[in-house]
Length: 435
Ligand SMILES: C[S@@+](CC[C@H](N)C(=O)[O-])C[C@H]1O[C@@H](n2cnc3c(N)ncnc32)[C@H](O)[C@@H]1O
Image (cartoon, rainbow, N blue to C red; front, side, top):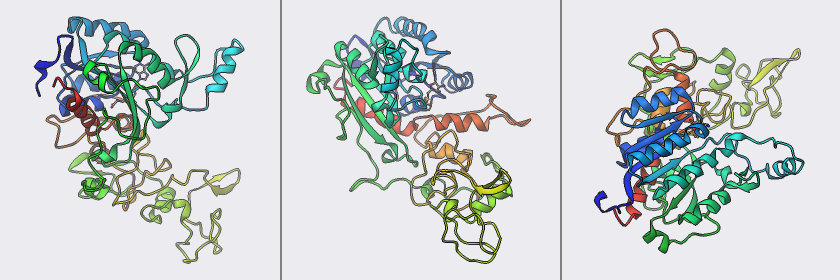
């Protein structure tokens, strides 16, 4: 990589905003080889993870609305007013939704403070930072819904997030493109779909790929990496069997941890959860369990909780208001994954069986911490370092435990897989004519 040919205005460093535990930064620094100079994160346990795993990186802990000025001046000072080569942003996505526009507009018209999710507006300080630091490239990662999310912009007016981004960044010379990407196409062994928006202000590139009005396209943009797995003539997707099939057997009642590996551990299930899931075949949900385990008869009524013989069917059920009834739930819950497909999306609830697609394909349990660490690609032969969760307290921890199970599940659930981030950034290195 010849970074010496970068022009005098740019320094070959990156910064991240909404950095979480820095899993995306693993891909940028350990994978693509771009040093991450500064990060920013609200939650202190995540900021502690950043400090632990990136000792050279400055961590701005706190609300970005409050830390943004320090973040900007830190970069300006460190880089002698040059621009960083890359900034990445992954604002929280829990609040994203497409149907708030009418409601937000009408509250503003009535002079009321609109009921809106403030998290969606976090893109605004993100754009302020982009405007001030003017990185050569930026990468914005978010959920699919962001494409249609409406916010109250800096003038109090209702605007689509992507339109807001273009309105403010096109005048600074950025050309911006957005693609939906499922990271399993990058060899990540789980399903994870995200909207990746990339902006560039390198004149040679912008003159070839000029700013467009509609930045989202289903066609792979020139800024986006193409998938390296799963297509015609490409290696197949990495399945659950490929990734974790070799790990020792665990059981949600009888073997909660592998004595050789404290990270290969799972939460305990109660007798009911165990009964429902034990009877559930690979890829299926317990809601479809129609056969009585006592008399073997199948029930044709999907709302039934009990067999004609009086024995309970192995379907999720609860005793409420004096009687047993089916637990309300999506058909994706209490469901097993498939051995020969990538895992389901890893979420903050990867340890909760009632959440979407969380059961091991064969064993009676959810995925262990070791398994989600592997599936997230945080543990991968490509990285020169080992990422560590140790020594950072968070949530309820048992005495003697030196890592927080909750922290691991949450940080991984909110992350961009480092292997995907590495490929996204490697593509930018490939496209940049100066490198
Ligand atoms: C989607 S996660 C980012 C994950 C990260 N890209 C990774 O790969 O690990 C968004 C992060 O933004 C943080 N965040 C939320 N509100 C914030 C705020 N007001 N200021 C700074 N960070 C915030 C959250 O705590 C969360 O860790």
